[in-house]
Image 1 (cartoon, helix red, strand yellow):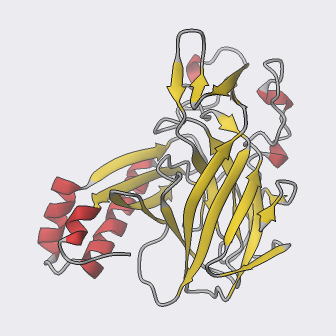
Image 2 (cartoon, rainbow, N blue to C red; image 1 turned 120 degrees about the vertical axis):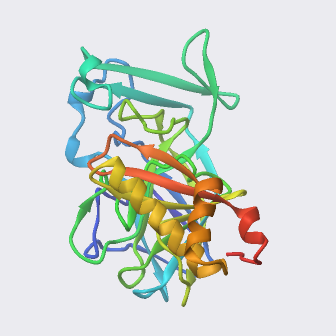
Length: 297
C-alpha cells in the first residue's frame, strides 16, 4: 500500500477520517512532506511566509483492521528514503537559542552520496529519522507539533530505519500517521529544526493483543527506550525514568531497589527535543541486560 502525502492531517484526533485501511502484518509506504509542508524551497523563503496552520503535516491516518483500544501497535521502520535537498529555517524568538537569532534565515542543504552538504567545508553523514509519528489520542484534537502519550512530534532521533516503535491504540483502527522527516538532527533540536526534508517511509504494522509495556516505547538494535513528554524537561525525564522502571518491574525478577540501582548504572537519560510545546526525553537500557533474563519483545 502506498499513501500519498496529499492525504495528511495536521492534528491527531479520533475524529480524523481514515482513507486507507490495512491488516495487521501489512507493509505500507508513507510519502511525507517536510515540516514546512513544502513552503520552503529556496533561501528566499523565510519562516514568516509559512502557513502555520499547515505545519508538521503527517501522512495518514491509516486504519489497521482489528486494532482495538487497549492494544499496542508495533511499527517496524523498514526503510526511509529522502529527497535530494532539505531545509533549515531560523526566526527570532524561536528555539533554545532564540535570544541570539537576530534575523530570519533559511538554508537549503543538498543531499549527495549519503551526506548532507552544509557548506564547502562541512558535510554530515545522513541519519534519517522520523520526527512525527503517532496514533489518535483517546479524545480531542492534538496538533502535530505537540508530543504526548500517543506519540506525534517526539523528535527522537532514535526513531530511524531498523527500529521498532510501540504506540498505544486508543481508538478503533489506531489511526496511524507520520511525517516530519529529518536527514540529520541532533539531540535537543536546539534551533527548532533539523534538516527538514520530504521522503518516503516504509513500515510494517502489527497489532499486539494483551501486550504490556509503557508507550511510546522503542526497540533499537541495542536498546529498549521509554519516551515521555511534559511541560518541562525535568518532568519529561522523570516520567521516562518511571516508565523504564515499570518495564523492568514487569520483566526482570529483581526487587525494586535493585532495579533502581540497575537504572542508575546501565540506564541513560537523554534529551530528544526542548523546543516543542511539550519537551521530550527518553530513558535507554541495553538489550543485553534483558537477554540475561530471557526477555525479548
